[in-house]
Length: 155
Image 1 (tube, rainbow, N blue to C red):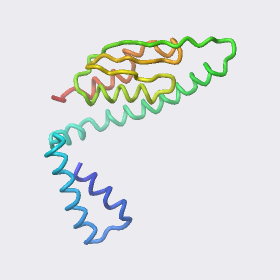
Image 2 (image 1 turned 180 degrees about the horizontal axis):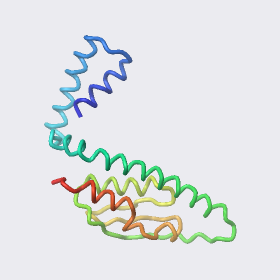
Image 3 (image 1 turned 120 degrees about the vertical axis):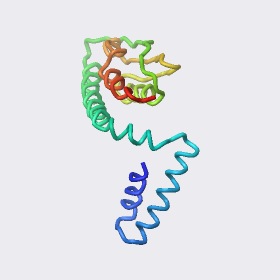
Image 4 (image 1 turned 45 degrees about the horizontal axis):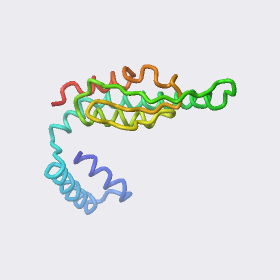
């Protein structure tokens, strides 16, 4: 995270001089200290994210792909005159343990067109779907599978 803060500092400055680098190291250090002190962040979490980077990248690509597929599906549902929409509210639970994974799943569902996460309580989700067809398989989606893999090793 320290390196990320430093890189953002350099990018926002638009150039790299000794003075900008020195200030960047100090500012990145203060921000990293703040994260560790007040937001329960740790270098251990940095290592975890580094090890899981390929899975996180796969998750992001999968999210983009699912958003594109859902866009086409919603487009078809809206512009097909002979089909009557049947909105549905779905309740389901997952085996995800970390708050990070549960919130990431809720946000991914909301980002996917045609579905909105209405509530998240513990590991129980309430999701509103534009059509009951969009609710099929939501509890065992590719998102849940990838998040379970990402969660392995997280204590």
